[in-house]
Image (tube, rainbow, N blue to C red; front, side, top):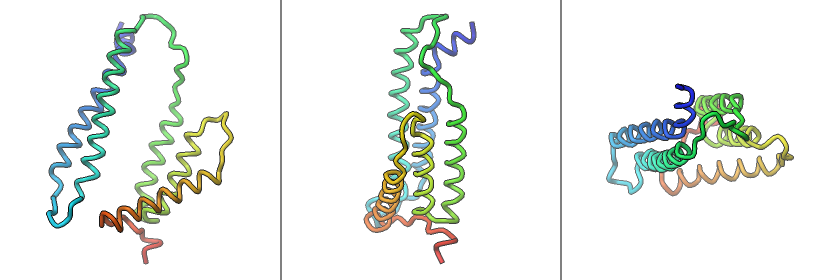
Length: 164
């Protein structure tokens, strides 16, 4: 009985959890010190990410409600494959990315992170185009660094290794 309840409302529970986290994140971003000298301050990105997360949580809640209405107890969930390994590897890569950013800087750690994440998320039955992965990662990382550094005047970590 309890297992059926969780299966029926799993999308709704997940969406609600993410919505609560997004609201707490947005409330926390209100405490970031604002600087009136620049138009886009340090609070911009956390508020943007929090808003996007809240929007996606609302979408997940909507899908969870639809799934709960269409739920049939005992019906086999065809096509649902749990991929715990990729989820754990994703979290490990995120943690490594944060740690390496302080050592290697934003650009180099972002390139490495994007290449590894792209390789992880590419389906196994698809041929990987390594050159495209590297070009995509370099262009996105350097472009983001340029945008933050020269347009928004927000410094990003240069790293201990390459920053000297």
